[in-house]
Amino acid sequence: MSRLFAGTPWDRPPVCDRCGALESACACPPAVKEPVRIPPDTQTARLAVEKRPKGKLVTIVSDLDPDGNDLVDLASRLKAACGAGGTLKDGRIEIQGDHREAAERALQKIGYKTKRR
Image 1: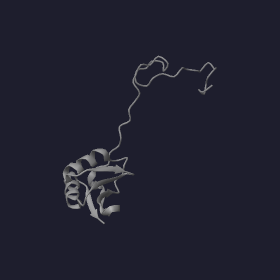
Image 2: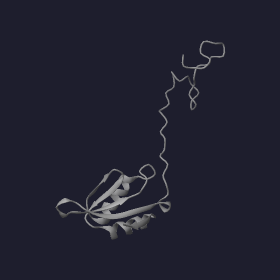
Image 3: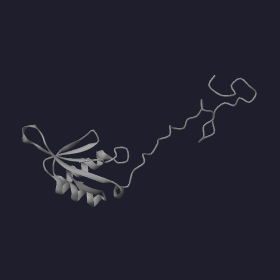
Image 4: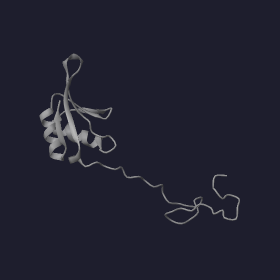
């Protein structure tokens, strides 16, 4: 028994909120929750350069909320603006090479505030 009044005279079978049909007969597609996006002008992106083994430099864009941003799209836009490859790891965007200036310009054009480390 999963319903409060199951087996009593007040027992009502559950109905769909959208179409009003019984839940067992409902044909509505499952509700898709739209992600809440944080406006870029309220966020500060931190830019840093890390030196990797064998002397390779990587530009790191961090401190952006992964739930409030489309980091995959932002990473591809930054890679295109910098003309370099890169990836998204652990909520940080990594761009191959020292591209702080180009990444900073691209982020500011989108509306993000930036801070260099």
